[in-house]
Length: 140
Image (cartoon, rainbow, N blue to C red; front, side, top):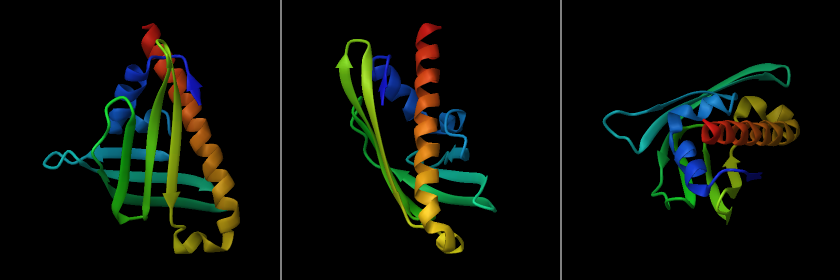
């Protein structure tokens, strides 16, 4: 997704893990551990597919590449890992690429084929909200 903010602005905003629920509503909270700032506790809440879905996990932020890549992997809870990459398009725009891989929790196996498109739509919507937030932050 291309957004109209410099890559540094997008990277810095996304680096604040505890702010992620502002643009990714499926994520209900992110709390960075005070004694281990490379670890964070994530909570997910979603009502859909005929179920109220709630999960949490502990994630480790891997060594980031400033203005290029933030990536993580879960250590406990829902197995997942992912990355957001930032590509400079010009002095005032950048391209974001979000990749996430995960294991379907056992309770969702009967509806697994429906989970992927729902999650993809939620993630795309989150990136769209991130773009609007980043652009409005730049305008302020």
